[in-house]
Length: 412
Image: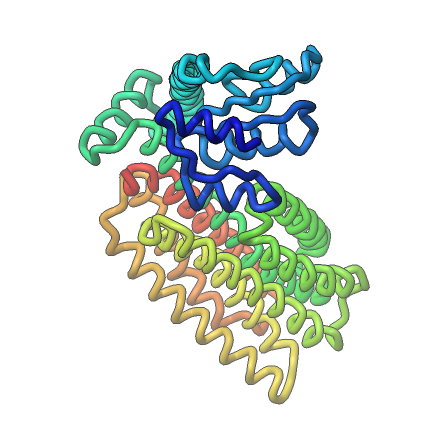
């Protein structure tokens, strides 16, 4: 700012905080926090327009530029940069106060327009959230659209939140619930693949077992692809990548014809997939709505345990020495964990008629399954174990999906 302008401003009763705009312009702006920025530059350049833009972005306030440049392009750039008064052909001391008043009035009008636009955008974004949340509630609770909206509005009033905030909670709950369900499937598939690999080698229901094995491989690939697309890369990308890396090792081993001599190596690779999938699932659980997500996690773990028990029981009969003994220990631990999981799910208040019926069916199948395990040393016994493990898997899978849907009511 040339000294005459600074002096004229002081003479007009206006305090001048800083008469220079050097390289530390932004720091000076934040330090002094002036009510207005007044610049004088005969020929404005890109740096000046950038400084004006910085004011609009970092700390909005009226900006006046006095210049000798009548270029129409620069006038347009001034408007874009957020300059309220772009005064051509210099200034007159007698007009300073009127120009300042003009800039202040335009600034207030511009701020009002920005606030109104922000409110319109907020309402538009909130409307999209409400529509998505209504769709989730309509699907999970079989509600009509107006009923779903009343649920959201009632929760908003009860919790003293905007309906958009409640809608976001419903959307987040559904997203994380689905992610935990899918990540939990990876745990289960790591065990199922080894079970099917061992059954194929033993010649048990060979065509059907081989088809299930191929389908399970494809399901792992598909599930990983969905998780990569749906989860935040910054938050969960490394965990998904760790699962994918372990999966590639197991996938290569499964491509060779099943051999009993390779059981231990295949199982070791599957355990790496299980461990990393468990790590991903547990991290998803603590991302929000922990109590409800824990229910989905436990129900999903039952799927894995049903397959882990069958796998370990089959391997215990097919291997010898310490490997067989280790498989027996795994089977015993899985059986105990299934029983504990059923007790936990049976004690939950989060239930409905469908969940109660599915839980009762799974408990009955578990009883039959437990008995069949004592006879898995024969081909007939292996077939029965394979049949019941698949049935129990389907029942636990259905339960997990029902808990995922019921979670909406639990969260709200």
